[in-house]
Image (cartoon, rainbow, N blue to C red):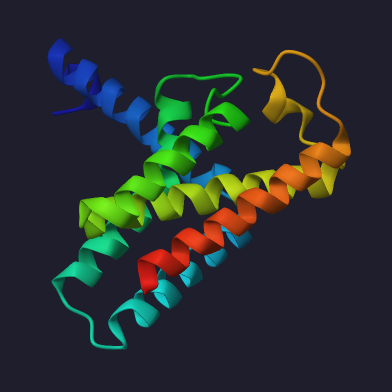
Amino acid sequence: MSLGRLPQTSLQCLRCYTKFMEKIKAIVQRKPPLFLLISIGYLLLAGILKWNIHPNFSSLTFIIGGLLGIYFLDIAEVFFSLQPSPFRSVVFVAGLIIVSLFVITSSGSMLASGLVLSLFLTLLLWQIGEWELHKNLSDWYRMISGTVSNKTQQWILWATALIFIVETLLFVL
């Protein structure tokens, strides 16, 4: 059967599939390769430190959660056409810090721990990248009334990185 002779519902399914695959391609292409390498390296290192090179089912769920976390925000931004992204804000980062601290210290779910740590790392890498390009994070503060000085933005970035390190240590230990 040629493409021109397919029933209408089959053509609609084919169009939906094509549109879906275009979004998946957009998601994969948005992630800078260096971010991907750092994220996967982090997941592997955290897993090795946590399980002392003796992986078990928990380590697999941690890696799966981490891989989901790498693309979680990209998936949400592409599929829901979020521009500007509400996730790339200090308000979201502050909320994530609280949620990730709870997940790591209380939930016991390795899938959730991998997801939040990877998500946290992704946001931190985006902030560092933006700082390197623009020498400010003003776009991340658009939900805050008033302006935040570059020096304060830099201090908050360093504090965020320190909190990420502490949360990683809490997970590994």
